[in-house]
Figure (spheres, rainbow, N blue to C red):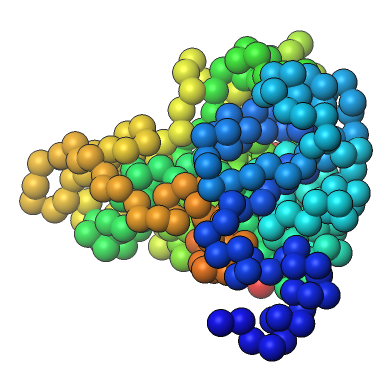
Length: 363
């Protein structure tokens, strides 16, 4: 039963923000922006979720809004010119941001004023200052802010995390992420425009795909920050990507381990995989749901990873659980992890620019 204070708060909010009143009713979610290409996949999956209700989309670009409305058969009444207006009119339980990375802070600020939980696509921010501002807004408003990575939901990655003790202390982690390039795979023009803008994206492949490795390595290192970061970036296709790098390699040093991030818009095929080497064995992820594992005194085995229990197995289930306070934001999705991710990316950007190793200041 709700307490007297909860009941009074719900009345004051017009019952809009009190999830305990809805019980198992549909989860009311809104989208903040459509310029991030992952919005398409989110809407496609959302259409299959009977436990979710789309209550609105904030998108100032009317032509882009019309395109999405036609493609996904969405009523024009769902669209709003900006996020504050959407929040005031629809009172969603959570907002999924699909803006440029530079737009994350403004999106979180709007949601903080409305006391609405937020999920955004990776990475958290384009600078450390922006990341800390997002963290401050989250803390002041008392709202959860989580960061969505496709790789968080891979059974193979969960298997690697859960099997760490079996391979001894971690000595090296190598993470490979990327594809042939945004133009080469045909991302939509509104996505391409900011993804290749060093201001709106923070960088090129370094931020677009380097964030995956920084996120996973930070998780494997139990949140510890690296001692130093050394990065090398290149423009292998300057005619296609004149303003940002399309190739990046980052080396993170820890007291007893190294992390190597390989982020690329030049892979011959899409890939998101990692190698975790310990003192007595290794685990190599294979696709979404298998690992190759070798332990001391045994041959290598190809193992199918077990299913991940809900709500940690799915973007939608996790967002609903965090927003309704049945699960805390933690691990790879947490602000704590992703503040460190932005620190790593920012340091890597400086290292690549100067040609020098960057030392991280003490936390």
